[in-house]
Length: 383
Image 1 (cartoon, rainbow, N blue to C red):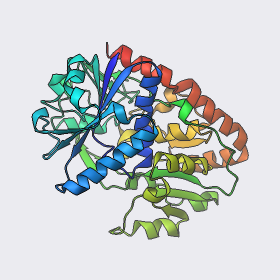
Image 2 (cartoon, helix red, strand yellow):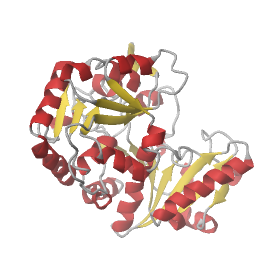
Image 3 (cartoon, rainbow, N blue to C red):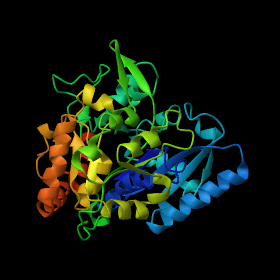
Image 4 (cartoon, rainbow, N blue to C red):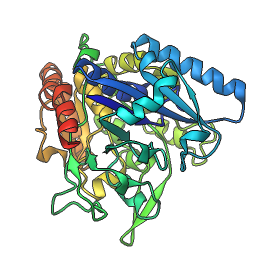
């Protein structure tokens, strides 16, 4: 098949090693499955020509390491990406001259998180939306037109979106589910981390909220982790967050977390590239992951792509329950919790039987999130 991947988050976030690592798995997996692909990356201009060209150089240098530089075109817009007329964009990359042919001949556009919008979207003859933030996307769409209805297929990793108890608004549309992928050849299991190594996670530190059905829905990882503020002292072991709290820190969160035993490090320092991201995960005891509260409140069944990276690295994951345990076995390798007491018990269990949980973590990645299954599921659902 001839497949276009549409995205708008990588060139604008060069320091996001985890985000890069997540996305790169998709073009690598599709290529390994024998498909022809073009990665179409959208970027809004900074207004400074020299700065834009520097970003593009760094972007393509990174792609070259993965053999993807010739398979990617960047469209640079001097306006908001909310509207995307192709004729006002400047195209960069080795495949820029063939972009028109690619758009006309592509069997399907895989549109990551509504990155490709109208009128560019309508140039593709078949369009599939891939939703990686269930609940957040659908609630936002109630007040913001993201051209969701202009796709032939709507796919989400919100595994419970069609469950009777799910509170995610379906917008009157048909949603199909798929599991996020691990491109297993990119992940090697290294020697297990010693007891001194911290449980970690990497996260954005935001304050945002949405309003839906007379509820205030937090989409803030700050809210998520502050519920477990006392956890490090409760378990008496090292806990670390690579959180981009920043220097302004109006609520003095860095000090508050440190006082309760959390180590805080800068993700743009410890995980600024896919390579440093993998090293950071491998040096961790495992992951302690809190999702955005919206995933818990709306029962989305969401699983973090970052958690999948820990699992593939042979590192156990302790994750707050979103409903994922209905379809993915938890208790060994992947452990769920919904209270600080349950979180503490899970950490103690992993420490007590660490090698068993490490082996099980990799097995979960292989059995439930293998890239072959995800590629097949996406393309089958796309028709």
